[in-house]
Image (cartoon, rainbow, N blue to C red; front, side, top):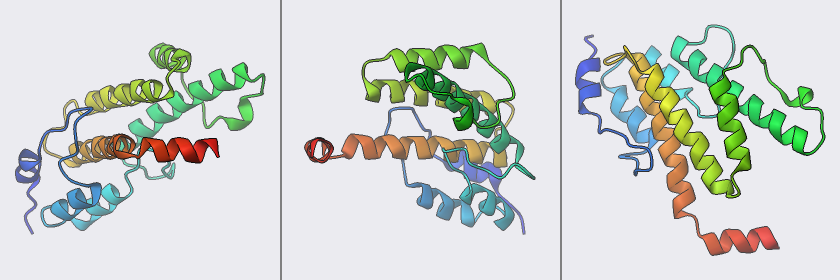
Length: 174
């Protein structure tokens, strides 16, 4: 069977951070189902913005995402634990390397008085990281993985923006 990555990817609507997702993640998977191999669909089904993937036999783009997201989360844990005078080591995941820009981002996010704006700042940086991972991948599975991750970020913000804020506030206060 011929696979149509070029057709599939060129027919996908572009995604912009802060915009509305063109379709759901499940709709994306359904669209891909007809045009790429089942083994690649299985990889796309495992895509998650939480970055929790098995460490063995991980697809390279997912590994890059996992490493970036883990490092970002580890830096947030270290900062938040130090503010509460707790030992961060029991909350850390594998801590392999340190990118000073991630540390700087985590510090700025934690200093932001608005939790929502801090989360937006973190997701914008995640988006930029995904743009970096996309370099050199234009019509392949890696591009689709990055597209799926971006779509999941947009879906997350769509849920946040469409939430009934009064109901959330009442639930929080009660």
